[in-house]
Structures are given as structure tokens and as C-alpha cells.
Length: 509
Image 1 (tube, rainbow, N blue to C red):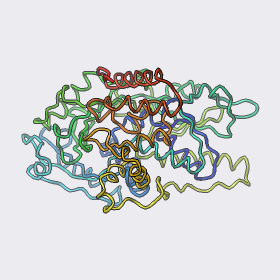
Image 2 (tube, one colour; image 1 turned 180 degrees about the vertical axis):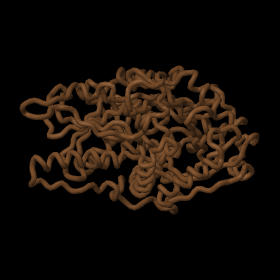
Image 3 (tube, helix red, strand yellow; image 1 turned 45 degrees about the vertical axis):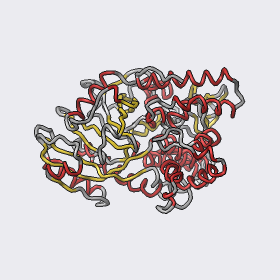
Image 4 (cartoon, rainbow, N blue to C red; image 1 turned 60 degrees about the horizontal axis):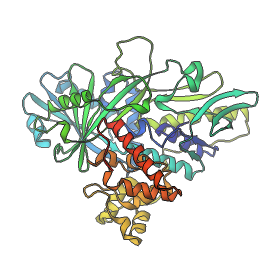
């Protein structure tokens, strides 16, 4: 399996149930889709139009469970969804849809409708011309890469082994059972679950993996919050399509996204093109006309590839209408694969996969008892939540959003060595103690692992972390016993990764 959010969820569930579990990941934790999403935990309002009521219900149930098990990583927010003259969905349809959304959440939250003046009071940046009003409803924002990492850390606490930068060369079955080729050797396994996201293919699954997925590329653009100072997440209708885009506050930044275009090729090579900026700026500029949405004001950008389960052959090449449902499939060798799905529903998807594995084990050995799933009950990070009084400490406040209860331990370490308490960049909440933590305990192999997925300076710092990258590379290489030449290789690797993903010139370091 891989170390994206799906593989992390499976590993955690299996380990908690007492199954001996090994995760093999070709690159880094959350390298693919799981660090390149829209960073939302949501039911998916637009899926109601597609008749995906069951999917929305499941996603809203999982959203509620994540509020309990990962409260520091999944934060509720009020989303503003305006309706303009000429929009495909008028205000009355939004009200009807959100009423159903409320019901599917079992009224954990309730939407409200505001007139045009009320919408402008909530969000003064909104264009006034043609504005008919808006609905306000609840969904949640998250840190996708950190959610994945934290889920894997929980799996490890329960006994799972996690190996990154360990690509699987082949899978199969022989007379002795299932085998996995990795790290130059053959690993025997009772059950194998492939959770490779957009890399799920014929190479891993044989004929079962042929034409299994349609890939969709999504791009997000990061701006300074001072340029796009919206007060809450904003939903924007794409005219002429059954699609929406988001504008989301992110501390001292705001991000815009996402595009949805068919993609072919290596999912790890997906990048941002000039037309992606043009598309997002045009879509969002229609409702935020005063925002300086120009290329020279961009802080950074990211591109990711969604693995969508193909409904059939043919079609117009569009990925907009393809369902975000998942599938659990099994090939002729008995190798399972969990494909498709949404970030929000990763835990439920993992439960389904581990339930299937558990049934197979019990059929082979009726005396074997495997507990039921409890991942919806156990917090990802043990310990009491950080209280409001503790957040009065700026250091704790910066750390709590990523580390939850573990922020106390990191703050104590930083207090003992004052240099660790300093911010890496003045207007961003990342501290040097987190660099130390990532190198020592979070499985960092390369500089881009740290600056893109552990601490997203590549996405939030206009210099893409250039001011601290060399010092971090030196610490990283020193920790593993490398030399100055290795530091330079790490820096060049990082520059190439940033340039590939953003489509910009690499930062000078």
C-alpha cells in the first residue's frame, strides 16, 4: 500500500485491530494527491446535483467524526455561497440543496439565507452587480498532508511499520502465497492492499488495473491575504458547468482553486501552467473584482491529480461529472485495491478494506478473533486538547494547529533551547522546533519532504523557503552523516521540485 491518506487510514485501522501491518511508499508520506487537495473536509454540496446522496451522507458523517478525533486538524468554518444573475444555480435552488445538506448532516449544522445586502455585509469584496443573495453553511478546512502524517503516526503507535522511499517493484502470488517485491527482496504477506491513488494501474494489479481510473488535474493558487482579504471560505459557481471553485482563507494567505481537467502521464509530474492561472483568475475575478488577481501577486501554487474510478469507456473527456465514490476491488491473485474516494471519507474507506481483510483471515482461520473497527472513537493524537488559556502563549498557538496536544512537548523543548522557538519566516506560524521534530521523528528523507509536506513553506512563503532552505538542508544532512556535496544535491532537488510543481523559476538558495 502507499502512504497517502487512504493507505494511512488502512494502516491505522489494521494496526489498532492487532493486525501486523507494513506500509511501503515509493516516495514520501502524502507525496501525491494527499498533499495537493483543496484542503477541505466537506460533504460535497455539488454532489447532491449528481444524485450522490449516499456519498454526501457518508462524508458529512465522517466530517463529524473528524471533528472529534482530529479537532486540531479539522476546523469548522462558515462557507459563503453567493448567487448572481445568470448563475446556473439561483438562490432558491441553493436553499433547497442546503436544506437537504442540513438533513443529511442530521442537523449538526444549519444553513441560513441572506439577501444581497447581507451577503455584502458578510463579505464586502463581493461584486454587487447582479448579486441576488447567498447561503451560509458549515463545512471544514484541514491540513491534508499533516492529517495524513498524523494518521500514520497513530498507526505506528499501534505497531504498524512504515517505510517511505521504498517503491514496490512487483506484486503476485505463487505456491507459497502472496508476495511483494520491494527493497531488493521478496516480502511475504497474508493480505496485500494497494492504496496507490492515481498510480493504481495494470503494473500493480494486472488486467484488473487496466483502464480502471480517469485522472483529473486540479490546480490551486496561493495569494497574500492582504491582496484577497476574504473573511470566510467563499464558493463560486463556474458558469456553463456543473462545477464550483473555492476561495479559502489560510492564515496570512488565501488560496484559490480548483481546476478540473483530464490528465495523462505520471501523476507526480503534474504542474501548473499559465492557462491555469488565467482560468482561476477569470472565474474568481467575476465575483471579487477588486482583488488584484495577477500573476505577479502570486505567492505560490500547487497541482495535484485526483484518481477517479472510471464508470465506462468513451465520454467527452471531461472529469467533472465522474463520481467521487470509491471502489474496493480484488484481482485474480487476491490482491485488494482501494481506489477513488474523497479525503473526507478516508476513514470509512479504510474500515471497508480492513473489514474485508478481516473476513478473509477469519475464513482461513475460524479461531482467529479480530476486533471491530474503533477508529471513529480514538483520537489521532492522545492527550487533552489545547485549551484557550494555553493558546495565549504565541508559541503554543503556532504549534497547536499542526500538532494538537503534542504542541506542549514541542513548546517545552523550544523553551529549553531558545533558538528553536523562533519562526522560520516572520509572518508564518512555523517554528524551528518543528524542523527538529520533522528530522528526528517524522520520517523526512529530503528537503522537499520537509518544506513541502511537513511545513508548507513551498506553498506559503513568497521565497518558497529560500531564506532557510540551506540551514535546514545542513541540519538534515548532518543528522544522517552526509557531506557538503549532499547538501548541494538536496538544495538542487528542492529547487527542481518547486519549479516543476509551480511552473515558476526555481528559488535562488
